[in-house]
Image 1 (cartoon, rainbow, N blue to C red):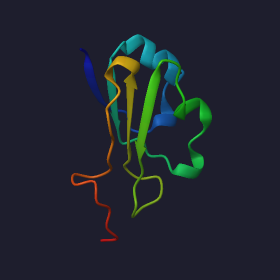
Image 2: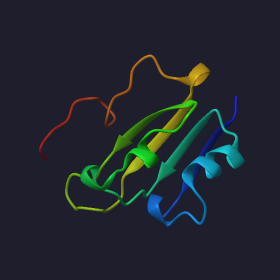
Image 3: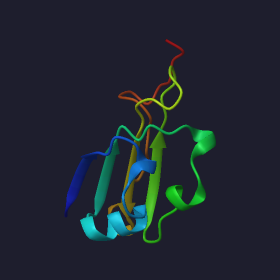
Length: 92
């Protein structure tokens, strides 16, 4: 299994399409940090990638700051996914 992590510094700043980036990386699980995107700006082309399930977490305190995305191929899709370390969200 190939698990990759990348501090992307803005998911919309890729020099080529995200689909091509994922293809070139050929990871079973690809974790992207610093996506710097908000839920309302996340478009279908970024969120939905053929052959991958995708999971996003957005900054709760500062719009367009931080954020992570995880793309998993079908054979590496988790049984469940939670946000945060405990899976319990708080307003703090």
